Image (cartoon, chains in turn cyan, green):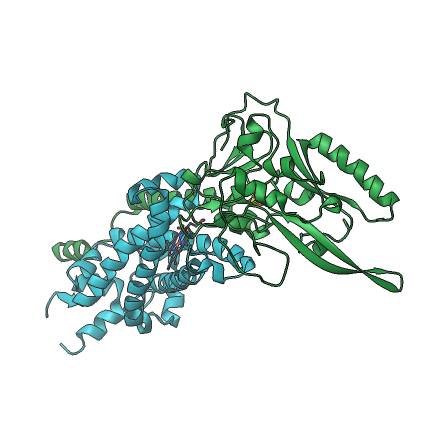
Amino acid sequence: MSTSIQRYTERERMNHWVIAILFFLAGLSGLAFFHPSMYWLTNLFGGGAWTRILHPFLGVLMFMSFFGLMTKLWHHNKITDADKKWLAAVSENLTGHEEGLQDVGRYNGGQKVLFWVTVVCTFLLLVTGVMFWQPWFADSFPIGLRRIAAPLHALSAAVLILGTIVHIYAAIWIKGSIRAMSRGTVSAAWARKHHPAWYREMTRNS
Amino acid sequence: MGLQTLDLKQRSATTTPSPQAKSNVTEVAKLIDVSKCIGCKACQVACSEWNDLKEEIGFNHGTYDNPRDLTENSWTVMRFSEVEMKEGEEARLEWLIRKDGCMHCADPGCLKACPAPGAIVQYANGIVDFNQESCIGCGNCITGCPFNVPRISQKDSKAYKCSLCSDRVSVGLEPACVKTCPTGAISFGSKEDMTDLAEERVVDLVERGYKTAGLYDPKGVGGTHVMYVLKHADQPMLYAGLPADPSVAFSVELWKGGLKPLALLGMGAAMLGGLLHYLKVGPNDADAEEKEKEAS
Ligand code: HEM
Ligand code: SF4
């Protein structure tokens, strides 16, 4: 039995890193306008006006690339009873005592919740962002709507950024995860510990 | 932008205090007496003359409003409303003419919403001014303004609006529209004097039968530095939709309020929390654990 298990295809990995780069670009250019203390970030994008021009395009590109990966992973992220157990035992899981607590499949409850949070935020960012996109689209939306869209955009961005910080930290903490998104494979030990049900499924026929 | 850049009360997207040493500046105000206005538009012409603005030739829309709306080239527009006022059994037609433009709010929503440091300033004398060279064209000023005033140019993506002739005022002149009005419907002076003047005029109008005459200086935006004397101050909406009780939208206040520094703090705390978690719990390393088990 091979000690490596395939977790992501080449396409999925490339898609993931395109999203990551665009997320950073869209996020940093957006944060520049989030609060005065972040305005210095406009220097990374060629000044205030350029940051304002570029941000929505970066956001739309991020949305499109995210949409690609999302449709591939959608069906893996249905919340099940095992996930509810995982979420109930979140503090044990976060201290690394996860064995035998729940029979985790391809993704655990935390990952699934994060997936859906990301889906909701990304869609909200697109829908609200277009509503005040100058100079092309903003004028087509009533001012009352734009006044709601702007704070909602900021809120979904903050939630998405917070979620992504958690996501990145999880990848750093759980050793052997980054390999899944760089080489596409994980070790059998990694799969047995973190995703036992998925491990059985993957090794059943081999 | 005038010469009084040091006499700032507020500056957009700035978290430190503005220079305040010169604090004995009188607050100014422009008083527009709607009851004296004949709708001749001399003020519109004076505005475009002084500010070097050229409106594009438009179309006749079947109204007297010309141009039809404020634009980046038309910082003031006369708005004409025909209303039927009930007087007992009878209805009387009234032609209400309001000179529209920036109200120079004491608590300006445009400035509050602007993300570009110094693109919008409020001088100590109360004038709210746009600094086009710092403007990034995001449109937040439009989102923030309760009076639908700022306009973004399609040519340069910068926001424009009435400056209350801050350049003229800074050298002791009155705004161009005030200078030119042939009926004396527009006055300019200290906010105190203008309020007194308005009160006299209101008494006059009430005596002449306009029982509901009054001063429009809405408190919801902290008062304004452009005020109206209205014959029907109880129904400002009659005057081409002048809001009765304008204020910066609650969602805009929320958006620009104290939650954002908290959100940034939250992001920082999340990163720091990750670091502390790593230091406390250590890496979650399935391979190393399995190797250890095999070894023992
Ligand atoms: C999906 C398409 C997106 C569109 C069309 C869009 C559009 C916009 C627009 C028009 C603004 C106003 C400022 C400006 O003109 O630059 C803005 C602000 C912002 N955007 Fe986006 N955006 C999108 C995605 C994103 C993403 C993915 C993020 C973060 C990861 C993000 C974070 C922000 C933030 C933090 C702000 C500042 C909000 C504030 O003013 O408080 N946006 N966005
Ligand atoms: S009327 Fe609008 S543009 Fe003028 S100061 Fe008030 S908020 Fe700003």
